[in-house]
Length: 321
Length: 102
Image (cartoon, rainbow over all chains, first blue to last red; front, side):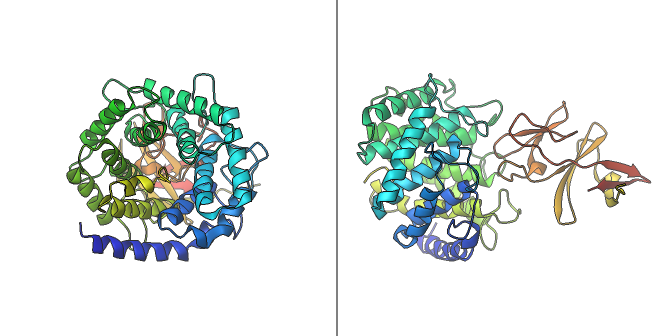
């Protein structure tokens, strides 16, 4: 894959993403916050966050009193999954924007996740699988720890450790993670969990034993599950992007050598199955903004993955200051 | 009194047993499934994250599971164990043609 081609695609898709701003920007009106978080991640990885302070402040403004967020910005019932995604984008945005309202919002989000963790280490959201849900606050706490955020630090460390342990303890013997209700194929959940757990291990310095071995087994399972054409999960664009991004960061951290065959094949499939502008959920389906954000994010990460500094791709997850 | 308005969407032979078909009616995507000879019609977009139910996994209990994040809906009434209900539509067959009431 030529990097010039990737650069052209990024430029073109980013222009489309901006053109669709009224569909994702909280400065325009109430929005679906998962989509907003996807969009803010694009801004972070395109390194344009400083131009969008108002969007980050608007996200802080729709935070609930309990420190969480609702799936839709105008609603008030906080749920874990979207709260973690929003909190993660806010703390990463704050690192670049240095705004007191964002700092306050991050502290409230920390309180929310400390308050909502279950006894066995999991977090629960009825809209998502428990394992997948748990990986999100773990991700958020990864960044909290990596950035040395001092708010309730010892409690965060304990909660983070219990969350990672919950994830590792629920891996299947074959290396995958499964949820009979939400993710029977195991593909998407395994992709999420190996990247979040492995980055956690990197940040918190091997505090939970067996994470690297566990994630290496999970990565091997993803290699095995990839279709010959490069896709995963029955040509599922979302899950193929998840696997591709996860494997890029995981192979960089494990130092097991780049898997150009797997990642290159995946990226080729992703590009071959994009629409004139953006991506749909499956080949041939109409473009939607969330998948387009994922596609753009995948291209931005691939560019970092192909760069000369192996830490670049890890930085793009925001874990290395 | 509400008048029923049935809309012809396809021929029955286009939806054989175990078959599925996506149709668009009044700008709404509807996923049609033929499960053991019974035809079901459900709004194609999952109320969770808009996943395409036409690509979902059906089961013998008359359900379809979204391919994106696994939310399952009963094709008879759209009910789900998740915090949402999918829209389902009445179906009738007449003279080899399939009709929906939206």
